[in-house]
Image (spheres, rainbow, N blue to C red):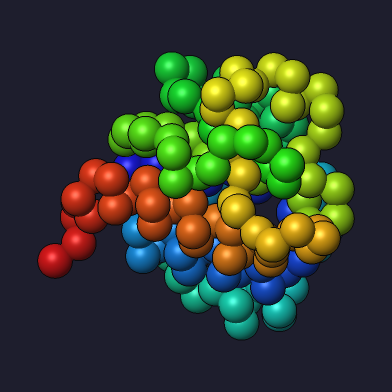
Amino acid sequence: MFHVILNSPEIPPNTGNVIRLCANTGCTLHLVRPLGFDLSEKALQRAGMDYAEVAEVRVHDSLEECLGSLAGARIFAIETGSPTSYAQARFRPGDALLFGSESKGLPANVLVAVPAQRILSIPMRPGNRSLNLANCVALVVYEAWRQQGFVGAP
């Protein structure tokens, strides 16, 4: 349905939760190195690796490699501070949803490569830094899936 890209994720439970989310929504998860953890860490396993058998998870050595494997996909970058809310976007199957690391977000050189209208944010109260990565992914994935009529759900 959709591609979820985590660029250099750092916290195992976040990634584990996103694996579980992808398993339950039919999304393919792309993890871009460097990872802030070993994929066999117990925290990652507790949080969702038991879902790895039903989720499609791909690991890439670089963001360029990852994006190259998604030729034709529209890339949406989710980043704090964009004037465009994720709720304003019109998603379609095959779109890729790109999220940055927990501590750094997405690098500036990545953001300049994404069309401005595809850089999305999640509305929050002023003065706060950001939401938890796994929560951000859930919000955007479920909005994108809702727009498709929850295709594949019973």
